[in-house]
Amino acid sequence: MTKKKRENLGVAQEIDGLEEKLSRCRKDLEAVTSQLYRAELSPEDRRSLEKEKHTLMNKASKYEKELKLLRHENRKNTLLSVAIFTVFALLYAYWTM
Image (cartoon, rainbow, N blue to C red; front, side, top):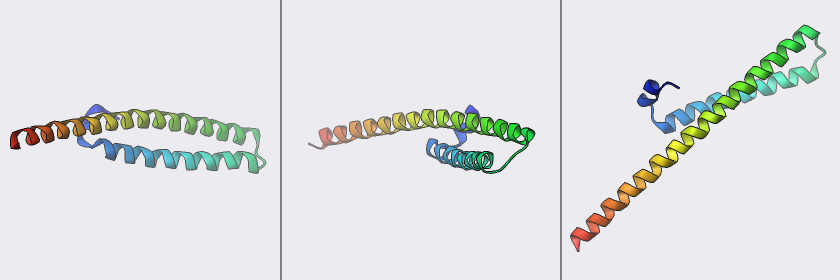
């Protein structure tokens, strides 16, 4: 996802969107795989389905890598938020004593 587009969305929304894309991709991959093993196919059809399967596997792999990066970024943001909250809580406790 481009950086400009990412600025407009929250990390959690990006994660949700990617999870949906990954889910659809996996369902499509499952459908293609079942077609490959169920039906008797001509060599051309088999090659076409295998090519589609390979493409879907690459796409799923790309989505998984991007999800991993986004989840890491989300963890960093969460830790930063907790750290800032803790600092403010400590400052508040110090000044009110």
